[in-house]
Length: 437
Image (cartoon, rainbow, N blue to C red):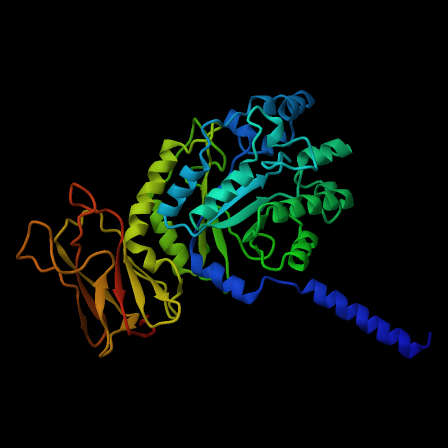
């Protein structure tokens, strides 16, 4: 072979490698993901019976603990109260667009009917394919299906004879070829048994080879963790370009924690959703079901508070992007309609806003035009219950240095006529300006 032929072959190899290395989520799928805004995360495995942290108790555990964890704990996992339709109905009410379910966490226990290992839901007293049941219900209620999958598998590396550790060299599929092949078989099962899967969340320190495998074989699946930024338990200080997703618990633990738990209240979770959307991200909010399959009442309460708020205000959360010049002024947060000069103003920190009362707010970030219209989401601006002389019409006044918003909270959402959660004002056909420092 002459030098020229060798050079051509080398270029072809490099080109193929470059093409492989650059596989990414399709841009149009990223856009659709950014439109969704809000999703539900579900952390659930057979160790929910103990109320422990999911999977991680295996790290540093004694031999006796590991043996009982892997061989005895599955024998008592019996989620007879699991009702996937009830879950899906509740998630749909919250305004969530997608649900991401832990098909396999780090412990290696599979929540589906798999042929790759006996350490799975079918070898429990319950003996039903929970993943398949949930997928069917999510589709029934038009929710996108996402799978959490951990390529780190403590039970697998234990059988290989390796120390269980998050940082050990053989815990990563980029170093452990046998583990990588095992992961590919499991991913193939998950992505072929249940119809089209919309997204996948790969939870491991090193997973680029599996991400590329998915992009090659399942190009219509959006990879979240593994490709995009997925801040955990925190919100970035500033907007980030492109798709990103904050995942966060309602309390302090991902899986069910029956005691010693401290929950965020519903209003705090709503405010976090607002901040995340104003900064251009999605909010993946976690649920940790009980071992019997029920959603804990504390979590259901917060889901239903969000459901009421989203039933009124979902337009300001879905199909929106960041405002180009600012995200926040004082107690006001902003999003804008994806393809229009329509802005949504979230009025926060108004805990005692009584029904029928008018308040004034000011912004330097937006200017009205001759075509501008204003309204409050959820209400018709025509009537206040039992107060026929109170005309709650929303008004604005464009002044030289700012825009004045005159807003009445007219809709009765709670029996005591006080609504503690943010009111959202919609203002159409606006201009965006840079506020003065």
